[in-house]
Structure formats: C-alpha cells, structure tokens
Length: 279
Image (cartoon, rainbow, N blue to C red):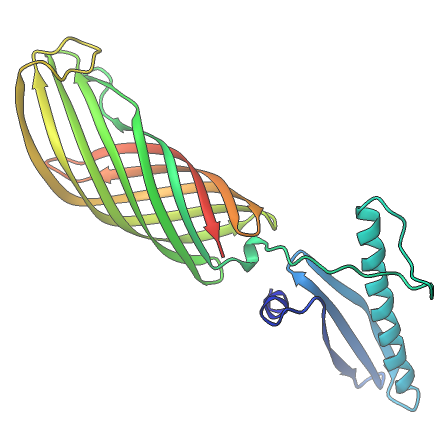
C-alpha cells in the first residue's frame, strides 16, 4: 500500500525495493526483493536469493538484477497478452513495456463522498396502523483515519407516514437529520468493501395529524387536527456493500436502522442506493 502511494505521488510506474537478512549460522545473506506497479493489486514478490558472505556475493547482486529484469519483462508480456496480441519487440528484439495504469483499490482510498436515494418506513404494531414506504435521500462523507477505522458525517431528508386501523386518523412526520458517523471497513477484495457505521445526531421535523380519514388512503383533505415541531436526538446503525467501479467512483447498497427519540422512541429502517466519489 505504501509503495503504491509513493508511485502515485511521484508519478512512478515501477518501484523496486527490498531488504536483506544475515543467517549467521550458515554465514549466508538472504536478499528479498519486491516490485510495486503502482497499486496494491499490482504487486510482485521475487523469490529470495541466498548467497554465502564471501567473494561470490557480487554474483548474488547480479542474480537479483537479472530476476528484476525478468519479472519486468514478464509484466510487459502479460500486457500484450491482455490486449490479445503477441509480445511486441523492437528492432533489437526487446519487448516493449507499456505505461502502467495506476488503478486504485479500496486499500488506496482515504475519502468517500456519496449521495443516496432509497426508501424508509417506521416500525409499529401492524394491528394498530398501516405503514407506508416513503422516499429517503441523503449525503454522506467519510475519512479513513487509521487502518479500516473511519469517521464521517451524514445528513438525510425523510418522512414517516402511518394510518391508524381503529380510528380515522393519519400521521405524517416530515423531517431531516444530521449525524456524526464512525465505523469499520472490511475489504473483501481489492474492489469490494463491506462498511459498518454507528451514528448519533439530531433530527428536526414537522408532525402533522389528520382526523376523519378513510382507511388505506393518504389523507390530506380531511379535518386537520394540528401540527407540531419536533427536534430530538437520534441514533443509527448502518451496513452496506460497495463496489469500486472506477478509480474515483463506487456504487453500493446500504441498509440503516434508526431510532428517533420523542415521547417514546420511533424505530425505522431504510434502504438506499449509494453513489460515491472516492479519493
């Protein structure tokens, strides 16, 4: 990961580095060589080279250099095969190495800024009310500050609508909320990520109540019982699966559980499609 970051920052196609250890019991040196091709999924480890610590040690240096050249030649051949072509050679019989694309993987991403569109509904006793599924839109940003741990901010606009079964009344809560988020990523592969967040914040909305409604219909023309402003704490738990489609763009699906505090807590769930810019 660090080697890939160096390649991008310095605009380097290939970074070769390594280390060596000394085996005192055998009086041998072991040379380890690694090659980064600009991203975490384009990474090569060369078989370690062992050599006695004597006058032949210079042969070990030559062998390591030869192994590096051979590995880079293999990369050039793989590029041509991937394009459906035979390895191209110039007049001197050398294989041409194309510019290496530094495609990002999730391990290279620090920031995500996304927009979501989905639906939500509240949880109440099904014998008491009919619940409507309503639209839900939001934005979210997150910064990976240490390993898979991240912090962020989220805001949504949503609605909770229900119809009482045993008396002719409907309730509608139009609200927005903002919350601070924190959580943990699981990178399932270089391009698939499983995200998990816990959030805490405040919601602000308007609660409307209509009476004299007919069952199973949106009721806005019946006698208006009143409205009230609500603003209280809320908490959430969110999980989602995301795919890195391009080096700067991801698409995913999120599911969220919400608790909105009022006279008594209101429980709700939401699902959404999320499109994010990543860098």
